[in-house]
Image (cartoon, rainbow, N blue to C red):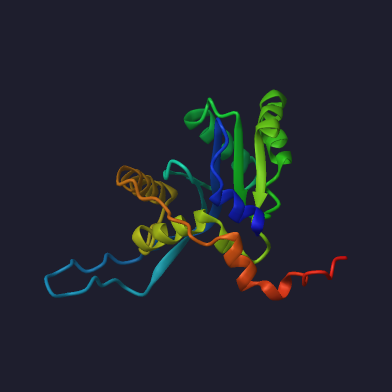
Length: 210
């Protein structure tokens, strides 16, 4: 926990990029009947019946220092998908970065091995040398700032029935562009000192380690 919090509150090193990464599944739900047209004074109304069309996955990476987010909608959430997403972001947006600190959870796809599985060996080694992982503790995904972005995405974009990956992708891309243009950023105030007070019963007492 402290490693994550210290990462948030320290200044970035020279030529360093700091990203929070997460992913979430999303159901594809298709309307069986067209919703009723919206009328003045009437709430949006749709039939309770819908058709399941499978699932997809949304990757999201939030740049702590620039306050921008990057997204990608994929069919699956495999090691290859993870590695390709990370590689695409770094090549397109941060080609000059010498160091990348990546805050993420302990999902089994979040490993250096994913790079070697999905990318050519030369590029995989480049990412292995450049990227430092900073893992959130188990059951503490709230420490990942990407979770805040996903919460906003869910409220503002995904609380509706979307029946195809193409629809999801259009909605997510438009949301990302709007949020980046508006320069919406996260102000993180929870510190290591706060954590030591909140979770003091889990810390050893002074002198107990002697």
